[in-house]
Length: 114
Image (cartoon, helix red, strand yellow):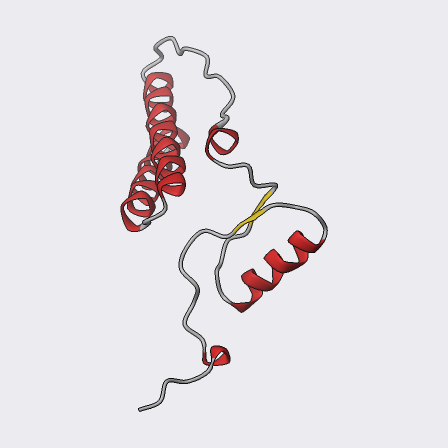
């Protein structure tokens, strides 16, 4: 596999990954972020395909996807105990944290009565 084929496959996989995240989230802001990231992966795919075929490539503008969808100062990946603790620390230091996803199931929150 040459470098172009590797890059093209990577962009295809990235697009599928972001499309799945967009489908799986109930958060409208995150759905928009992931959908835009998927569209950027498609643009990257198109660029690598053009480069492989020795065709001219249009210049891409810098992404502003996070600035468009959130006022968060920090995005914390993982809604388990460590992620939530990181969000608490960030908030204590006057940062606006964003923790995408649903809280992880944990025995730390107590057990249900049977």
